[in-house]
Amino acid sequence: MTNEIVEFRHPFRIAAHPAALPAGCYRVDTEQEMLDGLSFPAWRLTGMTISRHGLASGRVARPYSITPSELATVLATDAAMRR
Image 1 (cartoon, rainbow, N blue to C red):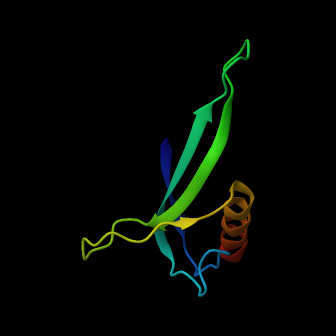
Image 2: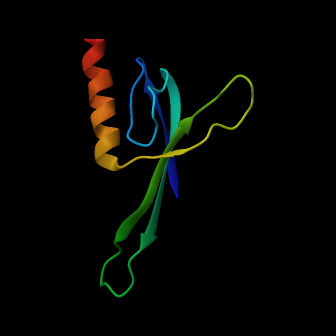
């Protein structure tokens, strides 16, 4: 599993959540499994989630499923709004 922190400067929408999520920092967790039987290392995506990161209240935010293409789209949209 790998994770990264991404920042949104504007509210955004994803398919797994009925309303817009607020701007802020979010943790993206990517889970992959190694494919066996190949002559070279290869990985297959098994899941990706996004959740609010660094909440002041200390509570754990619910993770929501997201696809790599959906994440790329919402990040690109947020970046375009900064210009």
